[in-house]
Image (cartoon, rainbow, N blue to C red; front, side, top):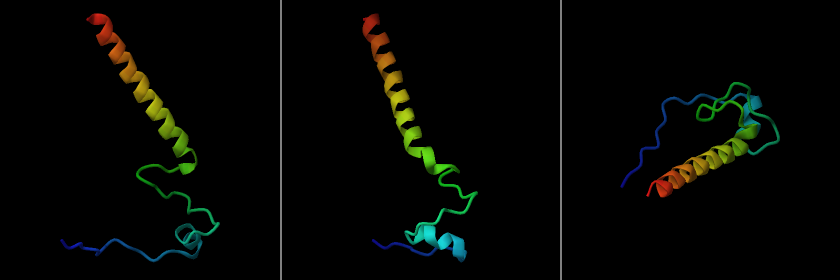
Length: 69
């Protein structure tokens, strides 16, 4: 098994961006998108809310099926 590690769409980082990728204390350049998410400060809360919504939905469906039997 071989892996192709070539990446054609890379660019040089700006000085301001180095702290983000090197574990520094800087903040990332505004406008960056992480999988379509521009504001990552609440991503954990958003993931929890999505999970709780999915659990609520599935629970509702299970209850409806159980009552129909």
